[in-house]
Length: 166
Image (cartoon, rainbow, N blue to C red):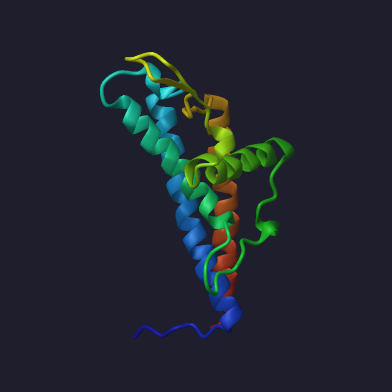
């Protein structure tokens, strides 16, 4: 017979946050692996067929899924424990870049990320700067390594919480 682990409200909320975060990190890591495997290391608009939309979808999902654990939630949501990150300075820079991309370009339309030049021409009415981006193989490899490490720490913390209620 299955029996629930009894946790304090604080520990239960933390467990739920970490469990969801673990899944989000896994989704982001899977997207990074796929982008790396496909060799999508330049701007999506430089590709043909359905590849640009696929590259955009995987890049967007990677960024949003990665940033979700570190974004404030609604209701009784806990914040992600900073002590589980333990990133090197290069990893901290990539982490900050991912969060900035999520907040300014992927979850919200920040005016600082948009540039459109209206024209008087009859056929070409405006020129827009592209919001397209890509990650280098080195960045993706570092991202995969850092999300593997933090996911391992999250997994260990989940087990500690679970066993504390037994």
